Image (cartoon, rainbow, N blue to C red):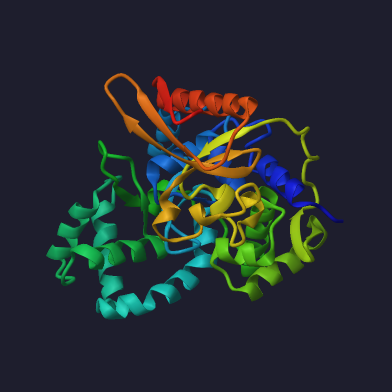
Length: 364
């Protein structure tokens, strides 16, 4: 099967529920995508909502509070949203690679396996019985347990290890502060996956929601080795279908939905949105600008982006004023009247998500 870059973008938009009927709840989106990068908490909630049938910020927050969506370090050394029923097998599959990445920094901080065992035990004891504690509160717990210095990076690494060891995950927000809770009290126990079973399931989720994509894209997103990725593709067999783009082999689910009828679309995507962060090669959505600098590293990676018909056209940021949210656009190319109307519609959707009027600035 051959395809074009335009069709690749259209397929990805559809498979990620950006141009097809959204899912009922944010937790359904997390489950379908497998994991959603969530180091920018508010941006990640907006990423989920755009793939639903109209979820608001309050709706998404409620699911997080109730534990129907969990936030933890998994796949790569960064935060992700995951479903409670998926968190254990995902950690078992990907935490060893994250641990290998973190080993150098842990040695510099004098964090040994023995220290982690003691800190995990102290954290678990403090959280028993449904307690949800902030990081600084757990830092005090670890200080009393004589773990050593428990501030700054060292405390952050202690808490990340507790996540990777399946001791803790996100708890309910306390005001604007994050908390931790015992994973055993937030996520159901389930039969453990064999490694190949976990590889197959992650392969299905990745290519089902992000295809067409390459093996190297999957390796980047999952944090797994290219050998593991090729094994996952092999196990999937006929569940995946290959296509060729510029003599590169990409994969997508063999049961992928037909391409929807093309129509003008615009999306105000948050930083780290899975539409682009899920790929090592992001060139497909940089065809219009002939550049993807806005999402390829450094501080620029923090920018929210404006996407028209799946193509990067600029950035956006928001500021909260007395009576409304101000959306400031930085468009890097000319837009048509139809495109400007689709951007205005996307801004209206952002306002509905936030429960506020939105004033748009920078739209010609």
